[in-house]
View 1 (tube, one colour):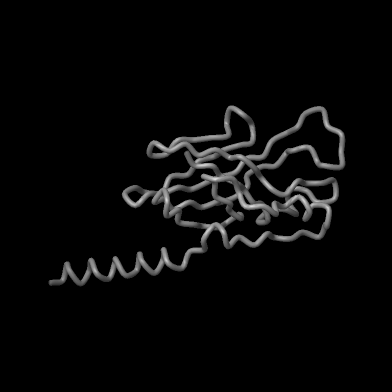
View 2 (cartoon, helix red, strand yellow):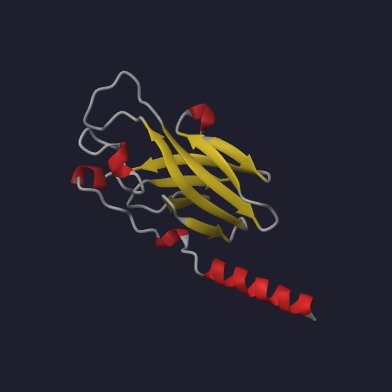
Length: 154
C-alpha cells in the first residue's frame, strides 16, 4: 500500500512539473538596450522539426518525449554586425537533454560546422541559429541571459 501511495505521489509531482513548462511556441524574445540588436531576433517560427529556446528555458518536446534545457551561452566570439573582421568567429552553448528513461546529459555545441551537433538516444540535435547578432555596442556580457537558439531534432 505504501509503495502505491509513493508511486502516486511521484507521478503527480512529475505531471505538475511537465504541465507547468512553457511550450516552445510561447517564447517571448528578450530585449537589449540596442534597437539594432533587437531587430536581429527572429520574427518567424522555427523551421519544422526545430525548437526555439531562450537561455535558461526548459521545455518538454512532446513529439520526441524529451526534456530540453538551454543552460547557458559559454562563448560568443562572432564578428559584430557593425565591424570588419578577419574571421567570422563562433558561438558556443550548453544544452541539457533528458528522456523519460534517462538521466540528464549536458552537451556543448557550437556554430562551427564540425561542432554544431550531437546525438542523444538515436536523435541528432543540430544548432541551426543563435540570436541576436552582437554589435560593437552590445557585447557578450550584455547579452548573457538574452540569447535564443533554434535546435533542430532529427
